[in-house]
Length: 198
Image (cartoon, rainbow, N blue to C red):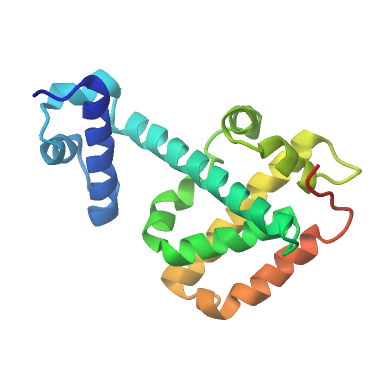
């Protein structure tokens, strides 16, 4: 039985992800992807304009899924009194990439800051469950919701950069050695004038 359109697209995305992780994004061609997916080259262009569009769509989807997962895990921690929502998010973010460094390598330069924040935040608000109350937990009394959202995106960028450098270059030290120090620094940046789950 021939694969349907949805299955073909999923096969292309799965092959692309596997190859990107194995040999790198720049080293993977459209030909490599269609060969791995066992599909005709023309099929690729039914779903994607070029490799750049495939990468953008895949990484956006991965980032949205990641944010959704981490916000949910952090909310669970808040509900049992472990930590504040922003701090729990950072802790889960660090732990996630300790366990999945290969995904950090792929996502490192695309932590949703490839586009302007004014375009990203509405997508997060529409697609991510609990995003609005989560941002309210970030928001300080002297800032707008949009400013809190931008601060959240910057927090993700900082966390991604620190985790990436520590995991792959051991700079300024291994992630294992700097986790508690880094977490304490991030905790301190959220400590004052902070809301909670409404």
